[in-house]
Amino acid sequence: MTAPTPHQPASTPLTQFTSRVLDNVARVLVGKEDVTRLALAGILAGGHVLLEDAPGTGKTMLARALAASLGLDFRRVQFTPDLLPGDVTGLSVYRPATATFEFVPGPIFTGVLLADEINRATPKTQSALLEAMGEGQVTESGVTHRLAQPFVVIATQNPVEHEGTYRLPEAQLDRFLLRLSVGYPTLEEEVRLLGRLQGAHPIHTLEAVTTPQELLAAQAQVREVFVATDVRRYVAGLVARTRAHPLVTLGGGPRASLALQGVAQALAAQEGRSFVTPDDVQRAAPGVLAHRLTLNIEARLQGTAAEQVVADVLRAEPVPVESRDDAAHAPLQVTPA
Image 1 (tube, rainbow, N blue to C red):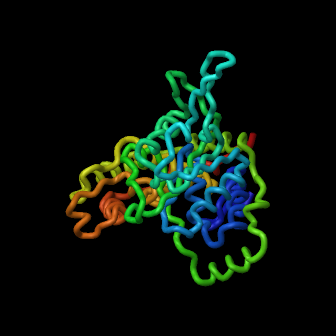
Image 2: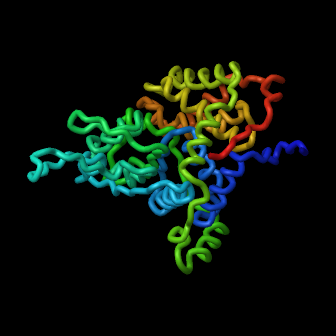
Protein backbone atom coordinates (compact mmCIF):
# COMPACT_ATOMS: atom_id res chain seq x y z
CA MET A 1 0.00 0.00 0.00
CA THR A 2 1.31 3.48 -0.85
CA ALA A 3 2.32 5.44 2.22
CA PRO A 4 0.12 8.50 2.83
CA THR A 5 1.63 11.96 2.41
CA PRO A 6 1.65 14.35 5.40
CA HIS A 7 -1.49 16.02 3.98
CA GLN A 8 -3.25 12.76 3.13
CA PRO A 9 -4.43 10.79 6.19
CA ALA A 10 -4.07 7.04 6.06
CA SER A 11 -7.36 5.45 5.07
CA THR A 12 -8.71 3.47 8.00
CA PRO A 13 -12.24 2.57 9.07
CA LEU A 14 -12.12 5.43 11.58
CA THR A 15 -11.01 8.01 9.01
CA GLN A 16 -13.79 6.75 6.77
CA PHE A 17 -16.22 7.03 9.71
CA THR A 18 -15.09 10.65 10.21
CA SER A 19 -15.38 11.50 6.51
CA ARG A 20 -18.92 10.13 6.30
CA VAL A 21 -20.05 12.23 9.25
CA LEU A 22 -18.26 15.41 8.10
CA ASP A 23 -19.66 15.12 4.58
CA ASN A 24 -23.17 14.54 5.90
CA VAL A 25 -23.06 17.51 8.28
CA ALA A 26 -21.68 19.67 5.44
CA ARG A 27 -25.00 19.19 3.65
CA VAL A 28 -26.51 21.39 6.36
CA LEU A 29 -23.64 23.65 7.50
CA VAL A 30 -21.41 25.38 4.97
CA GLY A 31 -17.72 25.93 5.74
CA LYS A 32 -17.77 24.50 9.26
CA GLU A 33 -15.57 21.42 8.86
CA ASP A 34 -13.07 22.47 11.55
CA VAL A 35 -15.62 22.94 14.33
CA THR A 36 -17.51 19.82 13.18
CA ARG A 37 -14.29 17.78 13.29
CA LEU A 38 -13.53 19.01 16.81
CA ALA A 39 -17.08 18.36 18.02
CA LEU A 40 -16.93 14.85 16.57
CA ALA A 41 -13.54 14.34 18.26
CA GLY A 42 -15.18 15.21 21.57
CA ILE A 43 -17.90 12.63 20.96
CA LEU A 44 -15.34 10.01 19.90
CA ALA A 45 -13.46 10.72 23.13
CA GLY A 46 -16.66 9.89 25.04
CA GLY A 47 -17.37 13.45 26.14
CA HIS A 48 -19.94 16.21 25.91
CA VAL A 49 -19.74 19.40 23.85
CA LEU A 50 -20.70 22.99 24.66
CA LEU A 51 -21.30 25.31 21.68
CA GLU A 52 -21.05 28.98 22.64
CA ASP A 53 -21.68 31.75 20.14
CA ALA A 54 -24.02 34.55 19.20
CA PRO A 55 -27.61 33.70 18.19
CA GLY A 56 -28.12 32.56 14.61
CA THR A 57 -24.64 31.15 13.95
CA GLY A 58 -25.74 27.52 13.56
CA LYS A 59 -25.14 26.05 17.02
CA THR A 60 -28.45 24.20 17.20
CA MET A 61 -28.20 23.09 13.57
CA LEU A 62 -24.74 21.60 14.17
CA ALA A 63 -26.06 19.63 17.14
CA ARG A 64 -29.06 18.35 15.18
CA ALA A 65 -26.93 17.43 12.17
CA LEU A 66 -24.43 15.49 14.30
CA ALA A 67 -27.21 13.59 16.07
CA ALA A 68 -28.89 12.71 12.78
CA SER A 69 -25.60 11.65 11.17
CA LEU A 70 -24.65 9.37 14.07
CA GLY A 71 -27.98 7.56 14.05
CA LEU A 72 -28.64 8.25 17.72
CA ASP A 73 -31.99 8.90 19.37
CA PHE A 74 -32.37 12.65 19.75
CA ARG A 75 -34.25 14.81 22.24
CA ARG A 76 -34.20 18.58 22.52
CA VAL A 77 -34.89 20.56 25.68
CA GLN A 78 -35.31 24.33 25.49
CA PHE A 79 -33.74 25.63 28.68
CA THR A 80 -35.75 28.50 30.19
CA PRO A 81 -35.84 30.14 33.65
CA ASP A 82 -38.96 28.16 34.64
CA LEU A 83 -37.53 24.75 33.65
CA LEU A 84 -37.31 22.36 36.61
CA PRO A 85 -34.75 19.57 37.18
CA GLY A 86 -37.47 16.93 36.88
CA ASP A 87 -38.39 18.29 33.46
CA VAL A 88 -34.98 17.08 32.29
CA THR A 89 -34.25 13.96 34.32
CA GLY A 90 -37.76 12.64 34.92
CA LEU A 91 -39.71 12.18 38.14
CA SER A 92 -41.75 9.68 40.15
CA VAL A 93 -45.49 9.82 39.60
CA TYR A 94 -48.01 8.37 42.05
CA ARG A 95 -50.33 5.78 40.50
CA PRO A 96 -53.55 5.54 42.60
CA ALA A 97 -54.57 2.27 40.93
CA THR A 98 -51.52 0.47 42.34
CA ALA A 99 -50.79 2.84 45.25
CA THR A 100 -47.17 3.01 44.07
CA PHE A 101 -44.80 5.56 42.60
CA GLU A 102 -43.64 5.00 39.03
CA PHE A 103 -40.57 6.66 37.54
CA VAL A 104 -41.33 8.48 34.29
CA PRO A 105 -38.06 9.04 32.41
CA GLY A 106 -37.32 12.54 31.22
CA PRO A 107 -35.83 13.60 27.88
CA ILE A 108 -32.33 12.94 29.19
CA PHE A 109 -32.93 9.24 28.48
CA THR A 110 -31.79 9.43 24.87
CA GLY A 111 -28.69 9.13 22.71
CA VAL A 112 -28.09 12.83 22.10
CA LEU A 113 -29.62 15.45 24.38
CA LEU A 114 -29.61 18.95 22.93
CA ALA A 115 -29.64 21.33 25.89
CA ASP A 116 -30.56 24.42 23.91
CA GLU A 117 -29.59 27.78 25.45
CA ILE A 118 -28.51 26.01 28.61
CA ASN A 119 -27.44 29.21 30.35
CA ARG A 120 -30.98 30.59 30.33
CA ALA A 121 -32.02 28.05 32.98
CA THR A 122 -31.32 28.46 36.68
CA PRO A 123 -28.19 26.88 38.22
CA LYS A 124 -30.43 24.36 40.02
CA THR A 125 -31.75 23.03 36.71
CA GLN A 126 -28.31 23.14 35.10
CA SER A 127 -26.95 21.00 37.93
CA ALA A 128 -29.52 18.30 37.13
CA LEU A 129 -27.22 17.29 34.27
CA LEU A 130 -24.14 16.74 36.44
CA GLU A 131 -24.72 13.11 37.43
CA ALA A 132 -25.87 12.11 33.96
CA MET A 133 -22.87 13.74 32.26
CA GLY A 134 -20.32 12.50 34.77
CA GLU A 135 -21.57 9.00 35.56
CA GLY A 136 -24.11 8.13 32.86
CA GLN A 137 -26.97 7.72 35.30
CA VAL A 138 -29.86 9.53 36.99
CA THR A 139 -30.81 9.10 40.64
CA GLU A 140 -34.38 9.95 41.62
CA SER A 141 -36.01 9.21 44.98
CA GLY A 142 -32.98 7.13 45.95
CA VAL A 143 -33.19 4.88 42.90
CA THR A 144 -30.45 4.96 40.25
CA HIS A 145 -31.41 4.62 36.59
CA ARG A 146 -28.66 3.93 34.06
CA LEU A 147 -28.59 5.79 30.76
CA ALA A 148 -28.17 3.90 27.51
CA GLN A 149 -24.80 4.21 25.79
CA PRO A 150 -23.63 6.06 23.83
CA PHE A 151 -24.97 9.15 25.59
CA VAL A 152 -23.95 12.66 24.52
CA VAL A 153 -25.00 16.09 25.75
CA ILE A 154 -24.57 18.84 23.18
CA ALA A 155 -25.43 22.15 24.79
CA THR A 156 -25.69 25.58 23.24
CA GLN A 157 -25.38 28.88 25.00
CA ASN A 158 -25.23 32.55 24.18
CA PRO A 159 -22.26 34.51 25.53
CA VAL A 160 -22.70 35.18 29.24
CA GLU A 161 -22.88 38.95 28.81
CA HIS A 162 -26.14 38.61 26.85
CA GLU A 163 -29.36 39.56 28.62
CA GLY A 164 -31.25 36.80 30.45
CA THR A 165 -28.33 34.40 30.86
CA TYR A 166 -26.84 32.69 33.91
CA ARG A 167 -23.17 31.81 34.13
CA LEU A 168 -22.66 28.04 34.20
CA PRO A 169 -21.11 26.87 37.49
CA GLU A 170 -17.48 25.73 37.29
CA ALA A 171 -18.50 22.14 38.10
CA GLN A 172 -20.93 22.16 35.17
CA LEU A 173 -18.41 23.69 32.76
CA ASP A 174 -15.85 21.07 33.78
CA ARG A 175 -18.22 18.29 32.67
CA PHE A 176 -18.03 19.51 29.08
CA LEU A 177 -15.06 18.01 27.30
CA LEU A 178 -14.98 20.86 24.78
CA ARG A 179 -16.31 24.37 24.44
CA LEU A 180 -16.40 25.44 20.80
CA SER A 181 -17.46 28.47 18.79
CA VAL A 182 -19.20 27.97 15.45
CA GLY A 183 -18.39 31.47 14.17
CA TYR A 184 -19.84 33.51 11.35
CA PRO A 185 -19.46 32.29 7.76
CA THR A 186 -17.36 34.14 5.21
CA LEU A 187 -19.19 36.16 2.58
CA GLU A 188 -18.85 33.41 -0.04
CA GLU A 189 -19.94 30.73 2.44
CA GLU A 190 -23.01 32.78 3.32
CA VAL A 191 -23.89 33.17 -0.35
CA ARG A 192 -23.65 29.39 -0.78
CA LEU A 193 -25.75 28.92 2.34
CA LEU A 194 -28.49 31.18 1.00
CA GLY A 195 -28.65 29.19 -2.21
CA ARG A 196 -28.67 25.83 -0.45
CA LEU A 197 -31.45 26.78 1.97
CA GLN A 198 -33.70 28.57 -0.50
CA GLY A 199 -35.92 25.52 -0.77
CA ALA A 200 -36.58 22.82 1.83
CA HIS A 201 -34.06 22.70 4.66
CA PRO A 202 -31.75 19.66 4.27
CA ILE A 203 -31.86 18.93 8.02
CA HIS A 204 -35.35 17.45 7.55
CA THR A 205 -34.07 14.78 5.18
CA LEU A 206 -30.65 14.17 6.71
CA GLU A 207 -30.14 10.45 7.26
CA ALA A 208 -27.77 8.50 9.49
CA VAL A 209 -24.42 7.50 8.00
CA THR A 210 -23.34 5.30 10.90
CA THR A 211 -24.85 3.38 13.81
CA PRO A 212 -24.61 3.58 17.61
CA GLN A 213 -22.68 0.30 17.58
CA GLU A 214 -20.10 1.73 15.17
CA LEU A 215 -19.75 4.81 17.38
CA LEU A 216 -19.15 2.66 20.47
CA ALA A 217 -16.54 0.63 18.58
CA ALA A 218 -14.84 3.83 17.39
CA GLN A 219 -14.79 5.24 20.92
CA ALA A 220 -13.12 2.05 22.16
CA GLN A 221 -10.47 2.30 19.46
CA VAL A 222 -9.76 5.95 20.26
CA ARG A 223 -8.91 4.95 23.82
CA GLU A 224 -6.27 2.59 22.42
CA VAL A 225 -4.38 5.32 20.54
CA PHE A 226 -0.80 5.36 21.84
CA VAL A 227 0.35 8.32 23.96
CA ALA A 228 4.09 8.46 24.64
CA THR A 229 5.35 9.38 28.10
CA ASP A 230 6.82 12.65 26.81
CA VAL A 231 3.47 13.62 25.29
CA ARG A 232 1.69 12.78 28.56
CA ARG A 233 4.21 14.99 30.35
CA TYR A 234 3.49 17.72 27.79
CA VAL A 235 -0.25 17.44 28.48
CA ALA A 236 0.27 17.57 32.24
CA GLY A 237 2.72 20.46 31.89
CA LEU A 238 0.25 22.55 29.90
CA VAL A 239 -2.50 22.03 32.46
CA ALA A 240 -0.12 22.75 35.35
CA ARG A 241 0.87 26.04 33.71
CA THR A 242 -2.79 27.13 33.67
CA ARG A 243 -2.79 26.78 37.46
CA ALA A 244 0.40 28.85 37.80
CA HIS A 245 -0.54 31.61 35.33
CA PRO A 246 -0.57 35.06 37.01
CA LEU A 247 -3.98 35.96 35.53
CA VAL A 248 -5.72 32.73 36.64
CA THR A 249 -7.33 32.08 40.02
CA LEU A 250 -8.57 28.59 39.15
CA GLY A 251 -6.79 26.53 36.51
CA GLY A 252 -7.39 23.14 34.99
CA GLY A 253 -7.46 20.05 37.20
CA PRO A 254 -6.78 16.37 36.50
CA ARG A 255 -10.06 16.09 34.59
CA ALA A 256 -8.71 18.75 32.20
CA SER A 257 -5.58 16.67 31.63
CA LEU A 258 -7.66 13.58 30.90
CA ALA A 259 -9.87 15.59 28.56
CA LEU A 260 -6.89 17.06 26.71
CA GLN A 261 -5.33 13.63 26.22
CA GLY A 262 -8.66 12.11 25.11
CA VAL A 263 -9.41 14.75 22.49
CA ALA A 264 -5.82 14.56 21.21
CA GLN A 265 -6.24 10.78 20.82
CA ALA A 266 -9.47 11.32 18.86
CA LEU A 267 -7.84 13.89 16.57
CA ALA A 268 -4.95 11.50 15.90
CA ALA A 269 -7.39 8.69 15.10
CA GLN A 270 -9.29 10.95 12.71
CA GLU A 271 -6.00 11.45 10.85
CA GLY A 272 -5.44 7.69 10.62
CA ARG A 273 -2.60 7.64 13.17
CA SER A 274 -2.25 5.24 16.08
CA PHE A 275 -0.15 7.68 18.15
CA VAL A 276 -0.61 11.21 19.47
CA THR A 277 1.70 14.05 18.47
CA PRO A 278 2.18 17.42 20.21
CA ASP A 279 0.31 18.99 17.28
CA ASP A 280 -2.79 17.01 18.27
CA VAL A 281 -2.51 18.32 21.82
CA GLN A 282 -2.09 21.90 20.60
CA ARG A 283 -5.16 21.65 18.34
CA ALA A 284 -7.22 20.33 21.23
CA ALA A 285 -5.97 22.74 23.91
CA PRO A 286 -8.11 25.88 23.28
CA GLY A 287 -11.41 23.97 23.19
CA VAL A 288 -10.50 21.80 26.17
CA LEU A 289 -8.85 24.30 28.52
CA ALA A 290 -10.26 27.80 28.02
CA HIS A 291 -13.68 27.21 29.61
CA ARG A 292 -12.08 25.56 32.63
CA LEU A 293 -10.10 28.67 33.62
CA THR A 294 -11.33 31.27 36.08
CA LEU A 295 -9.53 34.55 35.45
CA ASN A 296 -8.73 37.06 38.19
CA ILE A 297 -9.91 40.65 38.33
CA GLU A 298 -6.70 41.92 36.73
CA ALA A 299 -7.39 39.83 33.63
CA ARG A 300 -10.96 41.10 33.45
CA LEU A 301 -9.82 44.72 33.77
CA GLN A 302 -7.28 44.16 31.00
CA GLY A 303 -9.89 42.50 28.80
CA THR A 304 -7.84 39.29 28.62
CA ALA A 305 -9.79 36.26 27.41
CA ALA A 306 -9.21 32.71 28.60
CA GLU A 307 -8.19 31.76 25.06
CA GLN A 308 -5.31 34.25 25.30
CA VAL A 309 -4.13 32.57 28.49
CA VAL A 310 -4.19 29.18 26.74
CA ALA A 311 -2.13 30.70 23.92
CA ASP A 312 0.40 31.98 26.51
CA VAL A 313 0.60 28.52 28.05
CA LEU A 314 1.15 26.86 24.65
CA ARG A 315 4.01 29.28 23.89
CA ALA A 316 5.65 28.76 27.27
CA GLU A 317 5.57 24.96 27.59
CA PRO A 318 8.48 23.18 25.85
CA VAL A 319 7.27 20.95 23.01
CA PRO A 320 8.57 17.36 23.06
CA VAL A 321 10.30 15.99 19.99
CA GLU A 322 8.60 13.06 18.30
CA SER A 323 10.52 9.86 18.97
CA ARG A 324 11.21 7.11 16.46
CA ASP A 325 9.19 4.72 18.59
CA ASP A 326 6.14 6.97 18.23
CA ALA A 327 6.56 7.40 14.50
CA ALA A 328 6.97 3.65 14.02
CA HIS A 329 3.37 2.95 15.06
CA ALA A 330 1.27 1.69 12.18
CA PRO A 331 -1.87 3.55 11.04
CA LEU A 332 -4.79 3.00 13.37
CA GLN A 333 -6.92 0.02 12.40
CA VAL A 334 -10.55 0.07 13.49
CA THR A 335 -13.03 -2.66 12.79
CA PRO A 336 -16.61 -1.31 12.74
CA ALA A 337 -19.21 -3.23 14.67
